[in-house]
Amino acid sequence: MAENIIEMKSVSELLGMKFFIPNYQRGYRWSEQQVKDLLNDINDFRPERINNSNEETWYCLQPLVVKRMEETNTNLDKETDKENWYEVIDGQQRLTTIYLIIHYFNEMWVGKQKTPLPTIKYATRNDSYDFLKHLEINEKQEVVTSGKEFKDYIDYFYMKQAYNTIHQWACKQGTNFNNNEFQSKFIHRTRVIWYETVDEDPIKVFTRLNIGKISLTNAELIKALFLNRSNFRVSDDRHLKLRQQEIASEWDNIEYTLQNDEFWLFLNEKGYNRPTRIDFIFDLICEQNKLELNDEKYRMIGSDDYRTFRYFYEYFNSVQSDIEICWNEVKAYFQTFREWYEDLELYHYVGYLIVYGHTISNLVAEWNDSVDKDSFVRKLKQKINGEISKCPSLDFQYHTDGSDKGKCKPILLFHNIQTIVNQNKNNLDNSKYQIGVFYKFPFHLYKIESWDVEHINSNTTNEEDDVMTQKQWLMNVYLSADKEIQEKILVFFEEENEEQRNKLFNEIKDIFPQTEVWTPEEKNRIWNYTLLDSSTNRSYGNALFSGKRRVIIGKDKGVKISIPKMTKDGKLQLIEEDKAESSFVPICTKLVFMKYYSAIMSDANYWTKEIDAKGYISDIKECINKLKY
Image 1 (tube, helix red, strand yellow):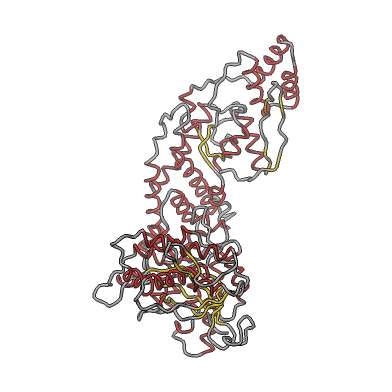
Image 2: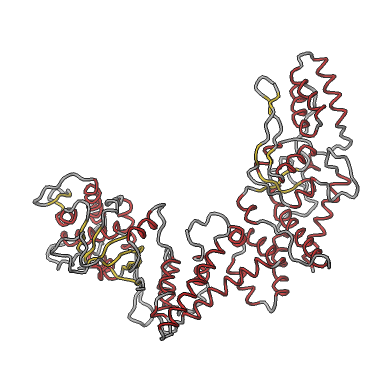
């Protein structure tokens, strides 16, 4: 099978070439802003000489994806079908704009030797190329087509608009504008990524690149470099093909693993929108210059979206290139990530640090510098301790409005992490088990959902001295009550007689006696905080602890339970149970509502200070102490 060609071509190398725009391409649609952005980028670009060499840096355009056309292709007329034509699969907008810019400067600078132009044949509206050639600026400074009339097509409107944008831009540059310098930078110091597909069906390639606006990725371009036979040192054709197949298979395995969100979101935040994820590893190699490009070459790769591709391109075009060394670097990163993912402590500690902004590249550097796993774990614990130390102390008094409670989130998340590590370590030490990890903290769910610090015991306190506050209290009690009490609550909301209402209210109130009073300050300490997603918090509002417990249990079972609402006319509106969006509840949040931290079973309806809250804070301290060992 023939190999795809991938290389860098300067604009000057495109001049004189012949391009065919097939009918599956949409017409020219570049906006004025897109044209101006390109012109400004070229004008602002300053080529720099690379030390003592004759090479200079260059400006890079996005890929031009093409396929050499067959000599007998029926899309070309008989006079041209034997010449070298390229079908443009992706990049025709840039190619047409390149033509317009060169054509404009050819026409406007009289007496200057004209720059050869590429030939562009359009399958749709055959006279499009003729239209381009006839564009000019008349004496009134208007864009016209000299000596020829053309039909009004939307493509021609945009071509004409682009030509006028180039003219207006050039006129605004003033007397300091150096036309020769600009043209030289554009023609000789500007390059495109030339991607020439050989065996692939052009329409399939076009569909893949354009449906959903999926651009050619760095990984796709780099893969062409990795599988190019000229980059292998194996001369035997059979061994060459075998090695190409091995790399392609290993590549697919890495990509497949990275596409697993559980694995991916352990290492990354949500929001990564590239279609291929192996780019992530190539970006790291480029960022750390693991292939040891010299300073001159490294400076040449620029800083745009295709910087990583150009890094590998420069490597494979250097004398020290070795595909095995390069591919081993890729595998080394992947194997590191997989080892972290599969190890009990590394998974949880690395995952925690990534949540709080520690970069993969720095963590990998620490890993490579560590003597063994234990020394790396000690470094991780030190970093986690640094994150915990940024938080207020465990007895800190947060604002009573709860506005700053998020400051303790790193502590609460760590409490979950260390609890899981402790439990799993205990299981591994038990001779009955020793079968590996039972449970891993799902970083992917934690990142996908909106988790925050919320009160265990409600932060609001209402004196039930009027019917409205009584109704509010009863709504919050409803989920905690058995069916008999729930029926009484429903009757209360329908009762018109004040005396009967008060009697009912007092009967219900006696069922839920609150023997302990929390001050607003006591409610806003970490012993009354836990991690909870925003949707669940909204669903239980200011319910009693026992009502919240019911909501949490429901969520854990995949059921969404909400406290009743009050209608505008003061009636009680029950909310039907629904399927929960997610059944993930952080382990410590679950244990809080199970009263796991309480030395003895206290009041089931309330979160108490002396038994529940103190037991909870004690366990948090114990987990933090694990960082010292």
